[in-house]
Amino acid sequence: MLRKIFLIVSALIFISFSSLSQTAPPLAANPKYSLGIMTGYTGGFGINLYGTISEFSYDTPLSVRFGAGYNIREAGNPWDARKVFINDNTNGDPAESAHSFDLRLDFAYPVKLFSIRKSLLYVGPRYSMHTSTFEFVGGNEFFDISSSQFGLGLGLETYFGISPNLSLVFSGGFDYYFDAQISGHDSAYNPDGTDVSGREDYTYQDADAAINQPKYEFRFLVGLNFGL
Image (cartoon, rainbow, N blue to C red; front, side, top):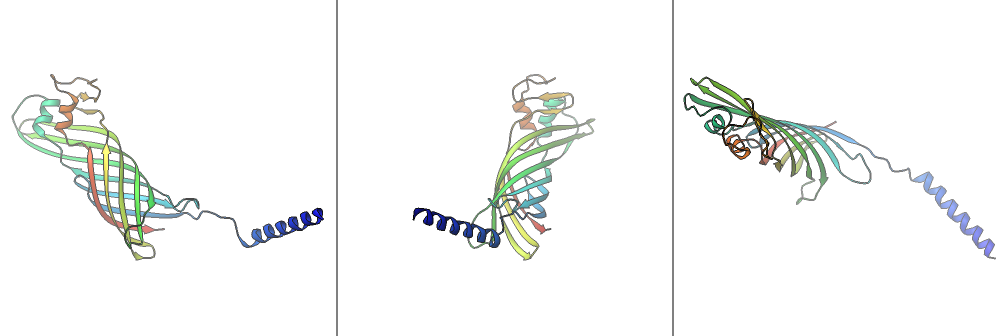
C-alpha cells in the first residue's frame, strides 16, 4: 500500500515539474540603456553627461550610471594664493578663473515619491580635477593651482515622461570631497604636513583657504534622459 502511494505521489510531482518547465520560461535579465545631459548649479555653473544601465538583473531594480562633468567655479582669493605659492608682492591687478572636471559613478535605486511615476535615490564615488588660475595684470604673475580629489556623493532625482524614450529630469544632490595635495608654481601642500617647497610658515590649511577647490558641494540640475 505504501509503495503504491509513494509511486502516485512521485508521478504527480514529476507531472507538476514537467508542466512548469513547459509553461514558465526561466527568468532572464533585460538590460535597458539610456544617455542623459544635465545642467545647473554645481558650486558654480556645470554641465554633466552620463550613461545608465538598468534592469540588468531580475533580482534587484538597481541601476548603474557613469557620468562626467565640467564645472565653472570661483577661483578663490588671488592675494592669498599669491602669498602661499609665489611671493608677498602687492603689485598688479588680480584676475581669476577656475574650473573642474569630475567623474562620477552612481548606484541608483527606485523610491516612491508622492505620485511621481519614477524617482531614484543614488549614491556613489566621485573624482574631481580642479584648477584655479590667477593673473596679476601689470604685476608679471600668471600661475595655476591644481588639486585632484576623491569624494562621495548622494542625491535624489525625478523623471517626467515626455515620450516613451524621452524624460525631463530634475536632480538634487550633495558631494563631499576629501583633502588632497594642492600644488602650483613648484610648491605643494599636503594634508599630512609633508609639504614640498612650501613658502615660509604657510600650511595646507592656508593653501586650502586660498583656492576654492571642491569640498562640500550642493548640486541642483535639470536635463533630459534619452532611452536607447
